Each structure stands twice: as structure tokens, then as C-alpha cells.
Image (cartoon, rainbow, N blue to C red):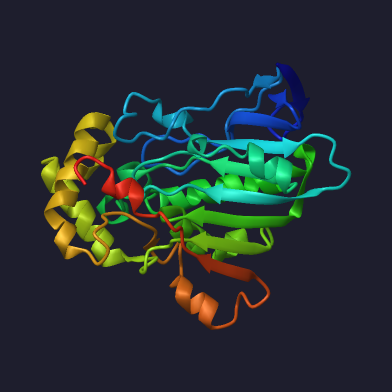
Length: 307
């Protein structure tokens, strides 16, 4: 296996060259404590070996993963490109509770685009979407959106070193990832860091109200029996936290419009405006927005246990 080193703003990273594509996997772009905003990781001087995927964000089946180090991204870039290439920045789906950037291999798209392909991890389930601002955890609003913004910032600053054009970045995502894309595209913090957006199989309702998100948070705190001390949620073992969320999700599934517990929230700060309104008033008239659907979107759900 041939290896290849590339400088970044945090330190050099080493990827693997296979055929006509170089892959850099598990590249750290941020780190985060539970229910805190992602921060810049400590820089390194020795090359960081990025030839294997980083850990999944904690989720059912991956609750033994280190929480603070799940924020990584993966890059596939063609060998020998003679010009800066367009960049596809992909956000995975999974109903906001499962999945990871490692589930998608960008080799084929990178080689045949040609293009630079980026997939990212972001915090899932309660760690990324449980809104606890009204309960004394001041940073715990739309953390998954903040994670995606941190990844986009990293790409904007570094992707030229991987052969990508930072002025030709397409935000793309599927299902839950499509909702993330639609919200991200409207944020002032993302302005100038992407040129178009592609949302595939986005839920009919892309944003959750702050009141409904607070209702979910209250139900989870009650399920954990810590309503009187919400800050205790920061030390609840992950299996207990995710089990409580699953019980709450099952109990309120019929109460929610789309049957989901989590999603981007119109919190007034991280997401200050309803995304539909931002698109409707012409603010993003210079940004291409493509909406599509995945033919076999529901197969993964029909084959799940229980269905």
C-alpha cells in the first residue's frame, strides 16, 4: 500500500493510494465533550496516519466508542488531476440516530467525476440533537449542526491541499443528512463556503420547533429520573441514555409528524430562521438547490428488526 502525506492546518496527514485514488480516512476535524460545542483539536507535528476510518459517533451498536473523538471526516481524491476539482461534501442519513461517514466509499465517484469526495461524522441521537438549553446546559443546542459547520470550515480551509476547489463545494446529504443540508445552506456561518446544495429524500418537515424539542428533552429527563438535576445527564452511562431515548421515542412516535424524535431545531441562535422562509424570500437566489429522492429509500427500514 502506497502512502501519501498532505499538510493541513492541524498538521500533516497520511493517506493511502490505491489505483487512481488516494483516500484519507478518519481525519480529525474537531473534538467535543458531551453536550458541549465542538472545538478545534490540538495540533500535531508528527504525521497523523489516516488510513483507517475513525470511530462511529455513539449510537446503538457503537456505544463503546470514545465520545470526544468521533468527529472525523474521510476524503477521496483522484491521482494526477491537472486542475482544482469540484468537491462533494456528503452528510449521511440514518434518522438522526444511526450511520457514519464510513458507510459510504467515495472511490468510484472520485475517480469518475473526477471530484474530491468528503464524508463526515457528526454527533447522533441525544448527543447531537437533544436540546437542553432551557435546562441549564447553555451549549446544548443543535450540536450536530455545529459539528457539520466545523467540518465545512475544515474543508474550506484545507481541501485545496487535497486537490479540491474550495470555491466549488456542493453540500449533499440523504434523508436525515438532507435535512442537515437544507438547514446548513441557510446559515450565515456557511455563507461563501459552498456553491450549491443537493438534498435527497429529505423528510417533509425539515425543522423541529423549539417547544417540541423541549418537550422531548423533558420526557428524556423524566425517563432518566433526573428532572430535578438536568446537569446529571452529562454523566449518565451511554447505554442508559440511549435506552431511555428509545423508550421515549416509542412512546411518542404517534405524536410526531414524521415519527422521529430528533432533527435540526429552530432554536433562534444556531438556526435563527425557518429554512423554508430563507429560501422563499430570495436570500439564496444565487445558490443552486437540487431536491431529489432515493428510489429504494425505505428498503433499509423494511429490512430492520423490528420493521
